[in-house]
Image (cartoon, rainbow, N blue to C red; front, side, top):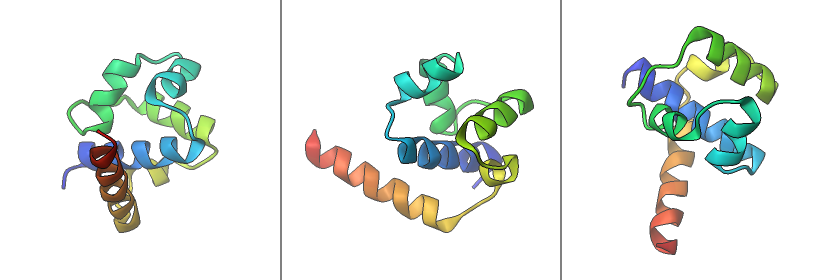
Length: 87
């Protein structure tokens, strides 16, 4: 797993904890939610400034956004499965 994927998984995990959709969450931060969806999928890079801004908004450290955490992957799989069932 590369750093883009780790950051994407962590972003999705922490955003999900807020209960906000991608659109609402990233709009509050003044970021393009369509671009951020690519970030969450690990397809695009995020600037260091945006990592700091998002971490601050979430009340977490930047370290938590860039560090691998197995439980976040397990959470992602569960959410993905729930979304598949709904669709």
